[in-house]
Length: 202
View 1 (tube, rainbow, N blue to C red):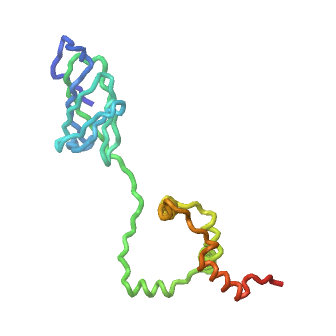
View 2 (view 1 turned 120 degrees about the vertical axis):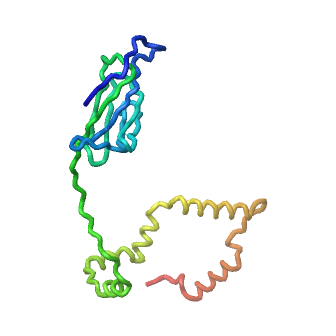
View 3 (view 1 turned 180 degrees about the vertical axis):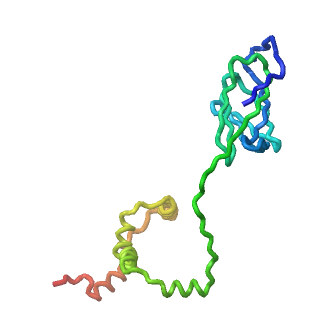
């Protein structure tokens, strides 16, 4: 880290004596190459900037602030602005070292054709245990049990509520009919009675 004072200000004005205008250049440590688009951040204040294509940045900070430099492929660096600075403008040169990291392997395969998909789908050997699980999960009794115990979602609750409101509004201002006086209900009753639905099983 190289710290260079550009000029001194002997007198503090308006109580901003702790403010510092920091201008710097970020370079690679091995080749001294300018590093563009490096993030220069002050974590404690959520304030920061990025370097230009030439690796240059300008940032307003306070004495004692910690600067954090980060860039993809390089190790993070931190720099604390000294409290003993006497000037309001300073320049720095920040060097960053390359960081080696490994990514998980990605295997790219060509998409199969329709003929290959049809062949694999028909000839694939599915274990019996998976077929048994699928069969049990789609049984009629299982579906009825799940429908009875699972709570309704928001869409189902809204549908039930709207049906109730529509039924209520349909008979607004009059007495709703009783099903005991419905001819259709009596017709269904006689049909069931003739079929023997109400006979006691022995």
